[in-house]
Length: 109
Image (cartoon, rainbow, N blue to C red; front, side, top):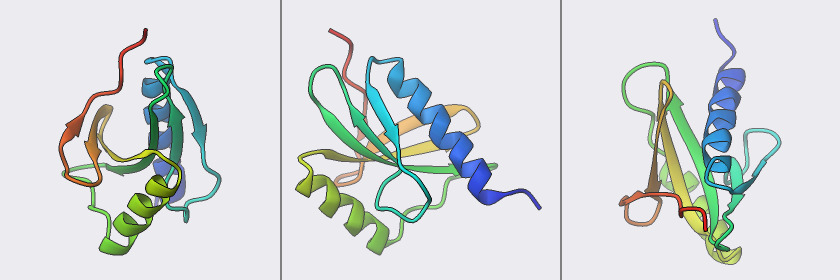
């Protein structure tokens, strides 16, 4: 059996690299039980708290209502946008945790 934590951490690092490509400062959170996985600040000042969901096949498991609530509440307290990053293989899509609309990282200035 493969290490689920290790697999998830690898995908978090993949998302972090992609966001750094947009000039963002990205901090990975230690452990796996927090409200979010990545804290992101773009050069524009836009802040994201990102929960990474990934899968080896098919569609990533959605957040539970409790996880979603924690993410949104924490983002509000920190003046950030709550974001869910869906990773399938090496493809990453970002969605608002509030209304599920697709998000694009802010472009570099």
